[in-house]
Image (cartoon, rainbow, N blue to C red; front, side, top):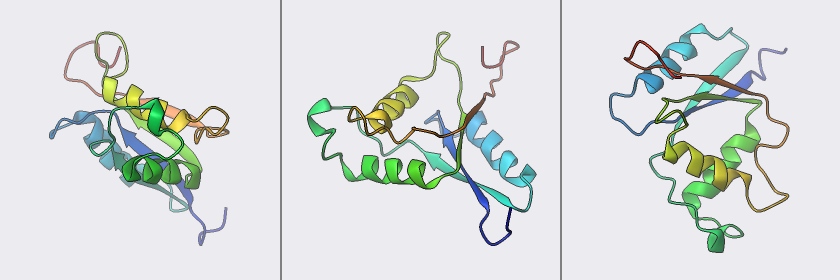
Length: 124
């Protein structure tokens, strides 16, 4: 890969917590990628609750989020586990970016998931 066009990975933090371990994991991951790649961290604080009435003309933070997904070469989710599932904030963001039907921003994107937690079970 050419060094003037780095592989862009969008690191999506699935936690809103100020001291999020998963955001910390993304910051550390930024230090580990090769020189021809970069991780841009995206926090979900601005994404409103999904409203199907707005999917054709989404709020500005959602439009920006979808634009960032489409511009990325790959996605890295860093997310805690809540009640054996992904946090609601992450599910909400996934829903926004997958709509409207047939216009998913996720289409064709390779995805990886990491999880950090202070419990012995980690991100079950």
